[in-house]
Amino acid sequence: MFYRTFLIHFNHTKLIKYLPIGHFIHFHDFTQKEIEDFYRQVGKNVKKIRKEKNISQMELALAIGHNSVGHVAKAELFTFDKHFNLEQLYKIAKVLEVSLYDLLPNEKPL
Image (cartoon, rainbow, N blue to C red; front, side, top):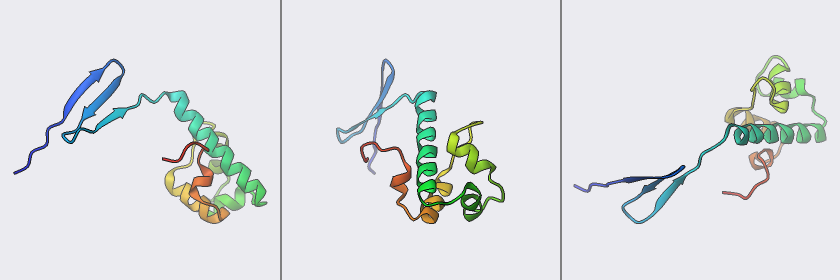
C-alpha cells in the first residue's frame, strides 16, 4: 500500500504544505478588503456590460430567475454584503452573451 505523508510547516504568516513529490503549496492570507474589492469589481463589470447591452436590472433579474430587481441592484454595487454567486454569474454571462471571464476582474489568468 502506498502512503503519502504531508509535512505542515508554519512560516510566520504563510502555511506551506510540502508534498512528497517535492512540490509545495502556499496558502494566502486573504483580507476582508481584498475579497470585498473582488466582489465590487465583479459587480462593476456586470453593470458595465449590462448597460452596454441595453438591458435593465429588472430584465437581468428576471432572466436569471429573480422576481425582483433588489438582488441585482445590491450585488452590482456590493451593498449590504450582497454579491453574485457562481451560478448567477454563469447565468448572467449566458444572458449577456459574454464569457464568464469577462465578468471577473481583469487580472492575470490562472
